[in-house]
Length: 114
Image 1: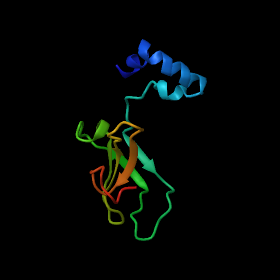
Image 2 (image 1 turned 90 degrees about the horizontal axis):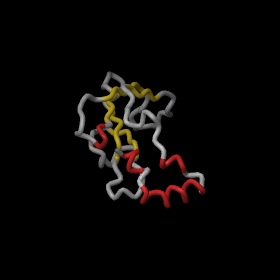
Image 3 (image 1 turned 120 degrees about the vertical axis):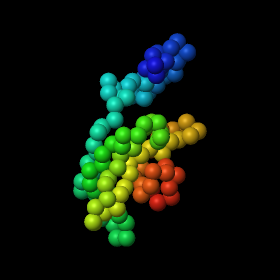
Image 4 (image 1 turned 135 degrees about the horizontal axis):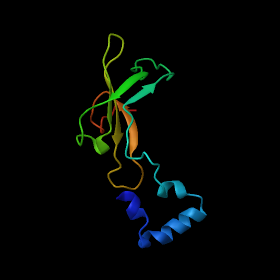
């Protein structure tokens, strides 16, 4: 649906201008754009004093429609590290892209997120 709407005639003028500026990427979707990975692994992130280590394996949560774009991955707690979450912080005014964050809660407004 989104891909088809990008090809509508009222978008042609904007598309041509963007194409001349070399910005075609924002108008084209990769074939797997609707597919989220099942696991995300972060390795090699520096350790910061008094901050949780974000390295680890994050597994996609089974819940759908409870977070923006159903994008939620969980790193399970162990003896050395607390549970952490990767999720999207939506740009509610739609003036820019949504941003991926790592947080200690599933609230995308969490002030401690990075």
